[in-house]
Amino acid sequence: MPGVARLPLLLGLLLLPRPGRSLDLADYTYDLAEEDDSEPLNYKDPCKAAAFLGDIALDEEDLRAFQVQQAADLRQHTTRKSSIKGAVPGNTSTPNCQSTNGQPQRGACGRWRGRSRSRRAATSRPERVWPDGVIPFVIGGNFTGSQRAVFRQAMRHWEKHTCVTFLERTDEDSYIVFTYRPCGSGPPP
Image 1 (cartoon, one colour):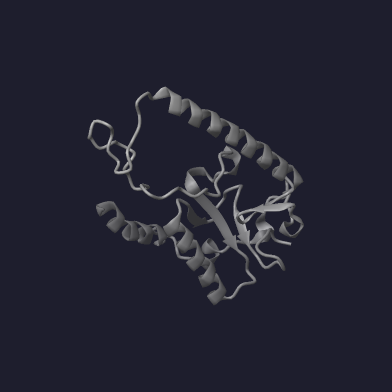
Image 2 (cartoon, rainbow, N blue to C red):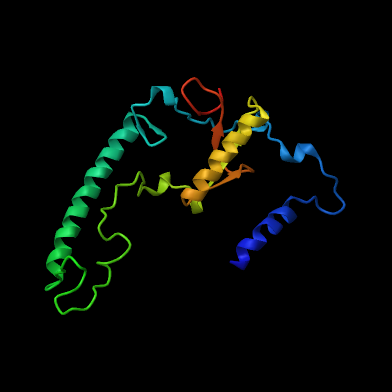
């Protein structure tokens, strides 16, 4: 855990101004007008979503693709499960997690003993996964300081309970924008 203890120090050093350069507030602000308009962005309105997958708004095309992927995953899972049962002869266990020869079975008596796993809202499609679990974000300028604090508190909650990390956007092409919309977060108007 020594690396974890050094993390606040490292973050503090990263935020210090470089020698010979004054600290300027403009270095830490984001101006939506600076966006490069060479490539139009195709934002989808979450109010017109065909369905939702967790907090992801799906249009008709994404919904069909998701349903096809789910069906393929189910077929693959069923095939794999039946082939595993037949591939390991004599792999029987008793309720107390002992094999027939009296030795404890590896994997059968683990952390999930007595509990079934619940399905998770995850994806196997690489284009829907944030690289390295890092999600760049921008909080719109129309929020107060206390509202921004609530956003940051919520992000810390998800960082603590999942494998994602939120970082303020620098120059990433893909990022999320927290902005006021009647039906939730979405792209800037």
